[in-house]
Length: 292
Length: 190
Image (cartoon, rainbow over all chains, first blue to last red; front, side, top):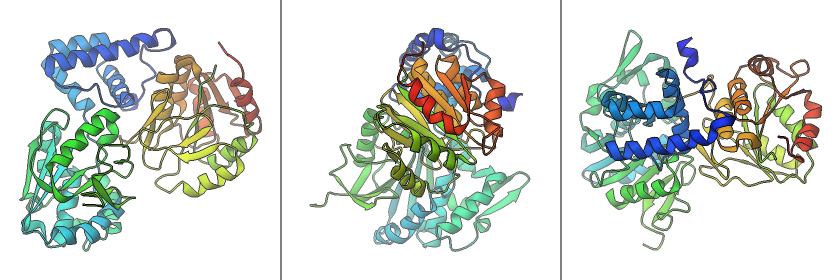
């Protein structure tokens, strides 16, 4: 039953008679978290927050959000658990293979004209994108002169990213995506399989700096030539999206590249006129308007 | 009054959706939000076809798009479709639910939380159990539920799973669903 329980939210106490309390308690919880721990979730997607909170209620067998709030305020460990629940930690290797193909064919040749390349992967979660990019850079002979800053606010996922150990069950799909992205070898050339998991070659990560950084509350991390922040903004509301876009913009050097998720956009944001579209479908933008 | 309709379909769903949308009256000023399981395949061709047979504006949902009446929003392949507020939706790359992304349960429950008793959930043909829990959540929040009759559905597993988990308000063959939707959206229900 436990595994089946994971996504069933329909057993919660919330329903037609008390839906106003549901919304009220959620607002109070995130106000409390902000006051006590300084982390502001209030501009996150409400649907995302509700799904994760109801999941936590079920998993910890707590009835109401008020009871959960009590635990969050009085038990620091429980707050850490909630932080894990709310963080965006779902990622894949070579998700959207054609994005990586565009990166390989259109962007890396431009970046290669710089003596030193700096890339920021913001919100790297468990690091699958970091290893995907490192493989790409290695095959284009750029890995040695590239520094990758891979950041996330969730220290637990950063540890996984550092180790580069992933579940074996996902690797078949990753290998297909790798080939579709224009990969020059076999994905298995880059990892060793052991028991139920695979471990990526640590030499891929030798120029990677994994660091704790919070996109919502922290400032500019480093000046970079390319900032990759894919499928993070979709979890934020418009206000927070704009704020994070300003942060990414401030960290990009002149004519640097900004890469977002395929359903994310700079349309209707402050960045609309400050960037040129390089790949509309795969959301690659170049800093500098058309008239710059 | 019903303010929005969520609709979920899987195996055999394209034909069922075409039937329903070709028979709906064009006067309905209401938004539709749809999850159709199609794996990671593109949905574009199907949406073009659907646009030709219905007076509604049919489109793939965009990130934080405004929910407009008279429009049919489909979840993009490989993204969950969620309702944020009565007038805005969101996409998510969260893990699969019921082995599915987009998942019908995710759309149904996030819609139930926002529209509450002003929501109608419609679950059609399919060969997995996605949507059953979501339909139950819609019911819990006071919304109406309609399930395609498993006897005449192209694939009966999905409608059966929903009927087993909750008692839907209506169980109808696909040919009668458009008429029922029109009837339910034209009058207050509770």
